[in-house]
Amino acid sequence: MMRYACVILAGGAATRMGGGDKPLLLAGGRTLLGRLLDRLAGAGVPMAINTRGDTARFAAFGLPVLPDDTADGVPDGGAGPLAGVLAAMDWAAGLGCDAVLTVPGDTPFVPRDLLAALAPAPAVALSGGRRHHLVALWPVAARAALRARLAATPAGAPRAAFGVRAFAETIGMREVTFPDQPFDPFFNVNTPEDLAAARRIAATQDAPRA
Image (cartoon, rainbow, N blue to C red; front, side, top):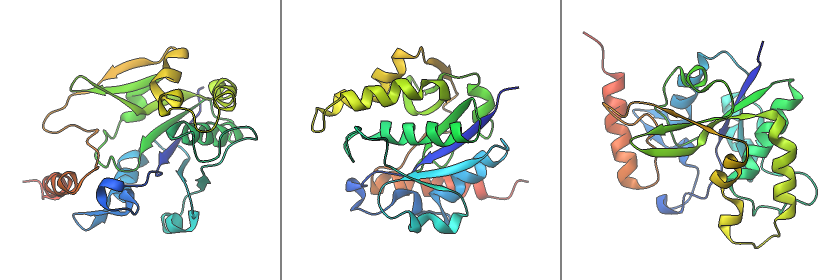
């Protein structure tokens, strides 16, 4: 029987939002991260949060918080999202899991059956013709290849060298298509306008059903 884990990728500088942690922004009186965790809770698998900087700011959620540092030889702070993917794989491997689901922390409306829909690994979510590179189910067995790839890429290399899709292609990532109506379930918050839209979606989701 396959064993899974889930890691929320809560890194990112949120420059278009004026700084701070996007997952801690509020929509309908709840944080984006809280909404996301509720959506994923039904999978019944171990969950953790990955971030850069002070891990204490996520302590209130009661989950393990994985720092965004990796093995010796991996560029410090320069590997972008793939560093978070590697941290997720390493944590899941320590739990004896076969695969780990990653989801960005500013994506509060993912399908409640996301893990089941993506299994088996490797698989990535697709909606509205767009591939959501970090909404993906990664085989833990790929962590050695990812660590080697990051270690072989010098600090200061172009951002494309650390591209998520480029690595995903090397492990045969499948695409799984999800409907994008009445809203895209992988809508993420990057700008103040996106946050306003997230609050409108939250209002519809929280409205009492007749």
